Amino acid sequence: MARSALQSIFHAYANQHPADAARALEALGAEAAAPLVRGLPGRLVGPVVERLSPDVAASLLQTLDPDNIRSLLAALKARDAAAILYHLDESAREAALASLGKDEAKRIRALIEYPPGTAGGMMETRITSLRIDITAGQAIATLRRAPRTTLFYLYVTDRAGKLAGVLNIRELLLASRNDPIAPLVRRDVVTIPATLPRAAIAELIRERRFVALPVVDSEGFLLGVVKANEIIEAIEQEAFGDLQKMVGAGEDERALSPVSTVVKKRLPWLCVNLVTAFLAAAVVGLFEGTIERVTALAVLLPVVAGQGGNTGAQSLAVVMRGMALNELPPGSTARLLMKEGLAATLNGAAVALLTGLAVFVWDGRWALVAIIGAAMIVNMGAAGLAGASIPLALRALGRDPAQSSSIFLTTVTDIVGFAAFLGFAAALMPMLE
Image 1 (tube, rainbow, N blue to C red):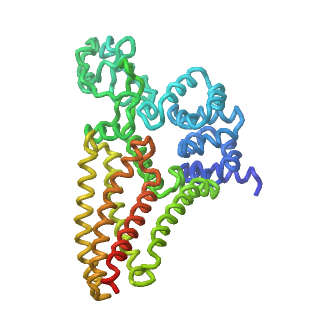
Image 2: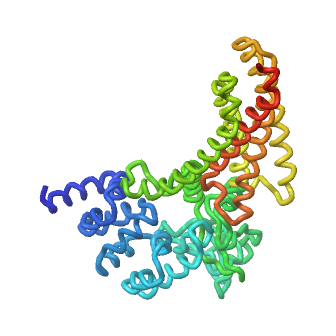
Image 3: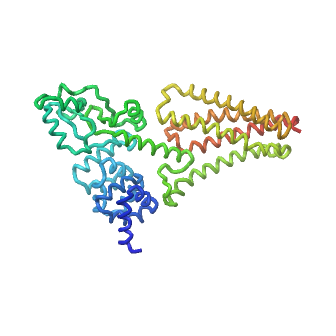
């Protein structure tokens, strides 16, 4: 198919389904996607590129010439452009910014100073604010001239640009045209610092039910606003990314990501998982003679390991949620570990009774019932502690708590489960035989 025909088809597709067009570009890869992006008209570039993952968009940006880079960045909101340029090295970033106008480049540079996961990295900088020393008539005239996309709440600043408060639209409309707005301004406005993490912003929005929150710097100057719907969407994306990272997949992977990207993201953790699997196999190998003497042990090994894995996954999920939603205040670590360990041990005792009953009906040996019951309690108790402590340990080491936590958890539950079950069996071998 001729390139012009392919571009025409893609234009129509992007016009009707920009999100699907973005996913298609991600599946193609940067080199193959670049010609399609170059041919997009300006009105379509923004809706498509802003839906790409920032790292994918950054890779795409590096394949374009300066004119295309300027057109692409100009079609994006400053926040989206900053998120993309954040993934480039300094030289490539400055080269891209050099193609823009002075004011736009300055706005984007200010946003790049803040990581994408903070209020400063997510804020909308184009907002309309009112000066506190104007009249009601002047305020209404300012609002009428302002673009609708820059109006959130009626924020009021002093002459220097520091946030002074917020104005109620009803009180503004009921005031006389010549009345000053200063007496109408509410001074107890809720603000957030530019460095506040995304999870903390989401918690504040959830508590206060705000549509938007003003972002200020350390001196109180109004920098922009963070919109509630964008925070919620970002939190949802982060949650899905954490789920992928917990099992060793890439956070930015999509259903139609290129095979090369999938292999690059997943293979290292599959190799780590292979190493941990050999560690568990080595534990089983230590008891090879025990298994040969009582073959029923080999049949029951997966039962012990599986229950431990499920128990650990429950603790891991609860602790990850608590960390994401800031539900774990300082000093709560010991209480959390005690709670998860005790709950898992009690569940282990209950499951051990059921398992023991099933094993007795199947095999009839009380010694085997005691062995699997004791192993179940030990493994599930250890699994509960591991599921709670692994993400806490990763965070303490400065690592992402979600990064392949389930792989490390599986290693613990397999090794402890195999060692406990086969160790008890070796100790009680005379009773088994």
